[in-house]
Amino acid sequence: MKSTNLFRQIEFIKEVDKLKYILRKTKLLNSDRNENDAEHSWHLALMAVVLAEHANFPVDLLRVIKMLLIHDIVEIDAGDTFIYDTQKSHTNTEEERKAAKRIFGLLPDHQASELTAIWEEFEEGQTNEAKFARAMDRLEPLLQNTSNNGGTWNEFGVNYEKVYAKKQVIAQGSDQIWRYAEQLINDSVEKGILKK
Image (cartoon, rainbow, N blue to C red; front, side, top):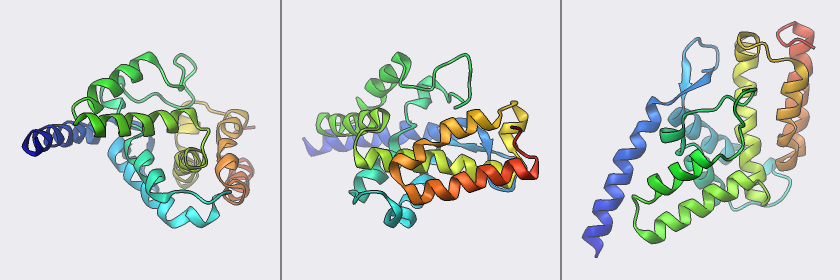
């Protein structure tokens, strides 16, 4: 039984290496290179470790880290959907559910069930852990775009109202981080790197 589990776990580990090839629209901080999903997930997990004291509620940090490490795995099959895409919804799609079933299904049943449940929890965004994880997911691109003189905002014509609406999710996870993020958004308008 254990050797069967190990084989399935290794197959999953090899499969998720593909996350390194999924490019996001956002660029690395102070860079013109696109970030990949694996870099994004790692960065968010580390952000959660460092910033957990600012969460609105006590959170199970290990659960938050698991969410952040797996939340974009479905993009191996479904691809990355730009948060400001006007053609395709950024919410949990049938395509992503199918991807979750296939990819997490490579694991032994108990792990497949656990990771699927954690992925769904992140997508639903209702628990304290999911709210904080989603705050990290919205903060990182904000830091990237402000470091890159507007980055994808300017590249794709994203205005203040759209940015503000998408970033407000941060407040559900951390009021303190939201105040910081809101200031960054307003500073970006003043600097002329985000159009109002």
